[in-house]
Image (cartoon, rainbow, N blue to C red; front, side):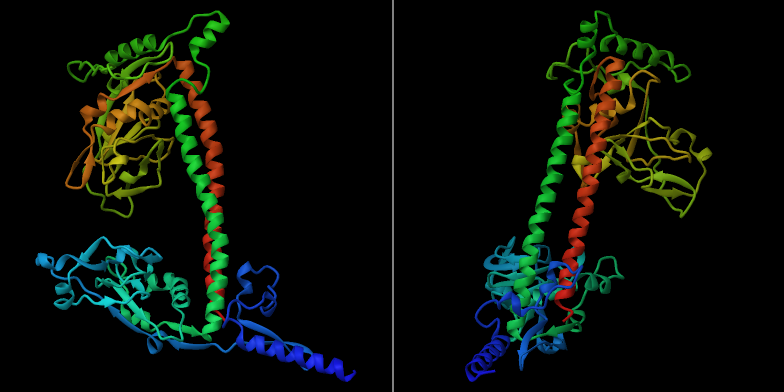
Length: 510
């Protein structure tokens, strides 16, 4: 090799070694300085844990120097406090006061409450500087993170972590994010998850050089940006499916989903039984089946004054007119690990009854014969903490074992073989029928509820029987397709979350 070539090779080696030593100080190093991803690795495998260089013309890989330290040995932690609520002068001041629920894995710029200078001086609340890394210690938000975008105080459920200049705040943030599941597991045991500052301080913390920390954070955020874009697209699909579901049900209750019986009869030159005629037969059967239950009670009649017009051949009925019986459930508290299955309140949602969402009574079905559910029964939510779930309705599916319902659910059984339960459930959950119940929900002691009397008066559109069957079949067909798409989207979202965890796990494994 001539002297000129030797000189150029030495210059290239020197430049390569200098780049390896100083990469990250003035920006991201070139991609060629990272190791090549292994087959099957996620894209995050390009995280910079190994640097390539040439020594004497030979390409080598050298592990960057990572130390594993106890987090508490390199960082300090402090929690805040809550000034006395009884001292009004402590609140409505000008110092932002962060509560654990406000740590939403983001930079915190605003708080729901502010405290005064006196509160800061006369309580355990502490003022943390802008840029402080915070982690939630208690309750449902345990393990949630935030970085203060403002100078702020915190309550005792928020731990501030104060880092030396040798640790990048975003690096520590992503590290704690990777440890969230571990923190939650360590916090279990009480009524709510609860972690201590000591648990945080005892975490084993990987400590590469600061420039490598920044490279790792940059690569994580690049991967997360791509991942977040994909997850956002999946959530848009979920939102569109929800809107499509609502549109299908709205079209069904307005007679626009399938050809009406009136249209078909006219095209085929025949007569048909109208919804009004069907309702007359239902009322006749209702009276006939009343035998043995005392004096016959005339059903509530719907007030149609403000109801929308119906398609030709349809009629308005009250739910009460369509029912053979209505009954609240059992008020006995479930107390067994086995025995008679009793549904939870959460088993009933819009157009569904989950037969696996149960508890048990130490009893037999023969102890509660009037409360045993049958396939085709309608179940309405009578009480719930969420007003939007009050009055929602589902149809009890076919089942083998005896099953009963609790007091906060109302069972309705339709007059036999006249109106389809699936159709009535669809109508009860949308449009004017749903609006009627929503206006009558009342809240007491944090529980929203509706009375049986209001439920009986709920207006239900009644089309001809054949049209009901066609509507039910078409809605179920479309919802079935939607459920398949939704299942695929949910599976993709779960995979995305697993990939997110994999990226973090690999980032901090050196």
